[in-house]
Image 1 (tube, rainbow, N blue to C red):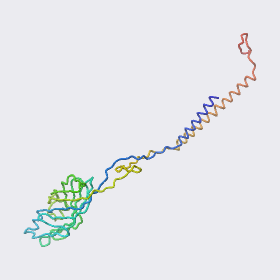
Image 2: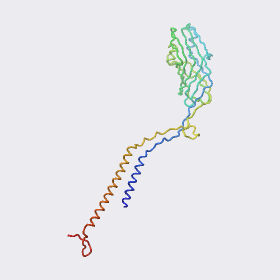
Image 3: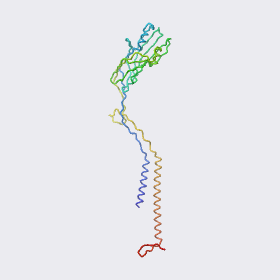
Image 4: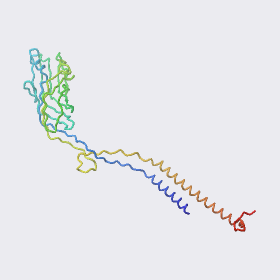
Length: 296
């Protein structure tokens, strides 16, 4: 009976193993804490932009050929040789150095009895974070025939270089005489009298900034002290294929049960045949020494 017990135990173990295989493994996303720098915006609270536009152009306007002049309005001012704009608005990212600073005020150039007519207004400095900036201006300009050919809002007139590494978090930025060149849009605004890439007067910029404010991301279900942490979720593992496993487990159970039935059946048949042979047959004769010998 011991072999039979071991066989039954093996079948039971197979069934338990197959049942375990039917339970799908669950892959849960585990949160990983990773620190990240918070983006902080520094708001501009004051400052001034100074720019002479182009010295050669001013000389031409005020000379005997053009017999022209210029006027400032809406917050712009002029003190030889620079135009000035104050009361800026905008903000700068303390981490990247990118930002935008806008001013209000206009400068209106006229000459040749009104044929030459150029107005620039509301300059904006767009910081690229790479040491350069764009000088944008609202622009209206006539061609040589006195026809209005340019009328754009915030046209890209000049490229400013030499900003270097800014530190907005310090609360102040000072840039003195940064080199500036004319763009293709700027050349059109000047009636193509100048070409793209020609030098303009340098730009000087001074800014005051308030405290930088940011909103760092917090990790989900993380302690409050992890202020600079952010949750990165792992991708879940592929789902376990339940159906093929279930079919295989059932097949194992059927095979094991069939084997038990066959073995038990053979055991019973063999036992019955042996008992019949002993009961119905003649006993063997013994020789003189008591050993059995087959009958003739």
